[in-house]
Length: 312
View 1 (cartoon, rainbow, N blue to C red):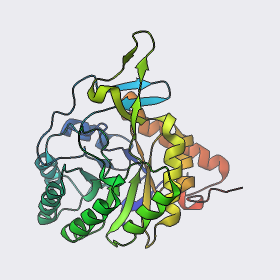
View 2: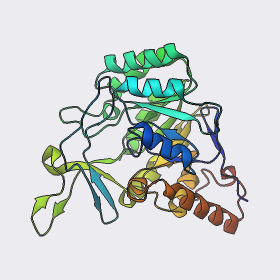
View 3: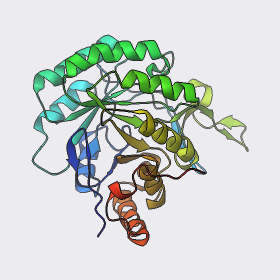
């Protein structure tokens, strides 16, 4: 049997799969579903300092080959997830990741301080890439602000953590972002990619945008963004130093796409659109498909092929 176990930031996961933050993880009941599923871990909804309703409906629509969303960070507020983390059973084999997405650096500092003070065994992922809050730019596209944020947050968190990144489309941006991240020893992983920002889906019959917020503009996800996600995973796998890892997310609908993410360099794989459409049973199906692919190719562990994509 193929070994799908992995580790992120020094913490073991029984298998490489978990949810993308934002999907099936806003409320405790959804997190309980993830614990019962065949995922290898779970991550909470990106938390803001205060509870948020998010953007008006409709704000998510499935598309042929993917999805479009402009959720606007609906969440229960960081204290809800802090309390969940305090009562989480860390003796069970699935580690807990907590996603934080403050609307300001001060909010992120206060949230990170609260988690640091609680001295919990959860792993923080700070979201630098929420593309769907009107009037708020993505921190991940502002290099100076990103470095300033990491300079402020790393000493507060004071243990290994990760950051969620938007997709990048220019080699110079891969170089610049990696150079910043490599300055911070405590940043032990990057999660890429978040949705591809500001797509527009229009209904042909009604000639109307499919979602309401931002005049119909929203983040693209699902299979249509697979190649962008693979490029970002591989670009950072090649550039990051000091044992830093990449969590791949984007376009995983089956074991095949998961295999490609690992081949590009991913140490773990998150599932978003497919999880929303199929539910937590997706983990068992995709896990089995990846095991079958590895067996057919003669790979016994993820290390056998991670990052070993061939180039022409």
